[in-house]
Length: 257
Length: 275
Image (cartoon, rainbow over all chains, first blue to last red):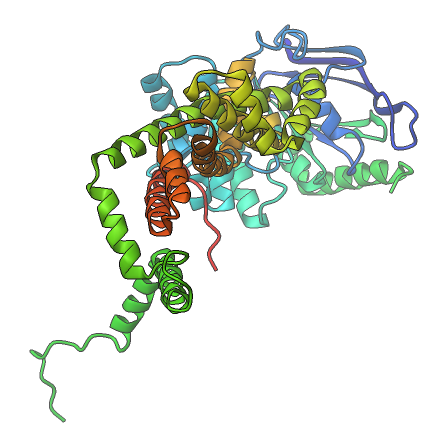
């Protein structure tokens, strides 16, 4: 299956860092993601994950290298990419003045879908994330987990080719995060969307990913761990612990605090 | 021990009291206003007895004068003229101020020029603007509107600017990831997010508009509440001055009340901080 996401030798240098010199946030990142695949990008805090996310979203263009999502550049083809890429962030980022259904449907509204149609589609996704009956509530009336469910519905409602989960379960309690991860994975599998999960949580990466990329600092892929085959093995639990140790050792070997 | 099952259960102890306390709590604004008015009336009554009536009339004298003013046909014409001036000037100043503030926040080039311009306008004394208005404009309405505009539009512009600059980056990043046009970004995120700031600027601006319109009417126009107040001043009619002031307070309070109702309805999504 062809790659939906194709990131080749991407580098990002900012004009000046804290010391006034050019600052390399992303040194050299290359990876691809196929439809239905879940690639987890793991790395320590401050390793350049957020910069990579901004480049994938098209908010920041790369200094060097290319990013292609469904054949388009997220930054150069900014408007053409509408609806193809959706993101769920660490915090829900719901617009507080919009009701649940208006938040869920905003991607369709931006795309110019008529109100009845976008409400109908938003209702479908709100039902899938278990928020039937909450359509007209405001974000402040919901719990953290419910708000993150609205954010997930908002991401899926445009039927994107690629979904980007940027520490999407990072601020939730372990039980809520686990349930939400499972539900989100079910939606990814059902829709066969290519998913990029950015996380600093190794356990989460091993639970969700078909492949785990470990980033060093400045961001570059220092190891890749394929999980599809070993997940099927009867000694998966042992293998998972081994991979976790490998990832931990790789991240720890990077000399930054 | 017998038990009468038909006897209704007594109401929970203190439920009525708690309900009453809650009701009193919900009426705090009204209660506060009533307390302030009562305190002012008491002070008035006290000092009114110590000072000559032509300088400080007693409450009955002022009420009688207020009633007299209300019976005059000219009163309603003057109120109408002032009201039209306030609303017209406010509408123009608010529209321009919001546009100016948004442009300042979204364009560094525009902000580079606009900020010193606003600083300059705000640095010029109000009286200078009134006198310049008298020299520059022959038309009375233009004089008043110019004065109101020049004093209130910087307030709206600066509040709007602050509101747009305060839009959280996280919400900007999320909305931007949906790939809206610039107009869409304004519509879906920036204007709604900046609205609480804009609204507080508008309320402040409306309050200034009322006072400035009356000031401008007194100096640069011959009609309206301001002109009537100027006339009472020339006649040493303190009771009349207070009567017209009361009318102005009622007019401005009504307008502010309308804005407050709109604000409450508009911002029902906000979680108010309760004590």
